[in-house]
Length: 99
Image (tube, rainbow, N blue to C red; front, side, top):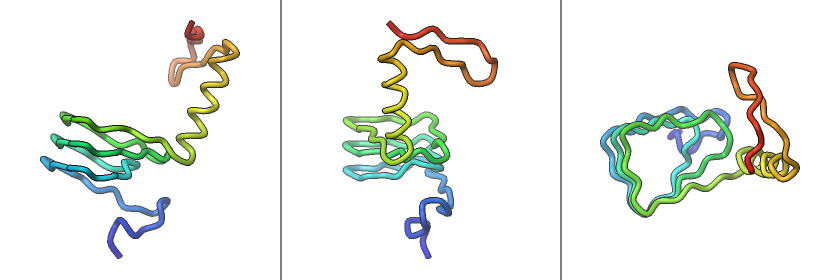
C-alpha cells in the first residue's frame, strides 16, 4: 500500500527534498518539504500534524484548509468578530484582539 492510499490518520510522512511540484494538489499534513518548488499548486491542510517547510519557493500556489483545519479557522473568525482575547501557546500571556 503506497502512502497516498493510507487512511489520513495512518498516513506515513514523506520527506520531499529538492522537488518541483507543478499543477498538483498536495495533502500537506505531516509532510516534510525542504528546498522544494511549488508552481501553480494547491496545498491542502486538513488539521493534522503541521507540515515542516523550509527553503521552499511558492509560485502562483494556494493553500486550502479542509476538515478540522477549516473548522478551526471558522471558530477563530467568530472569536475575532466578538473581540475575544487569545491565550498564546506556551507562555500563558494574553494576546489582545486584532482590531
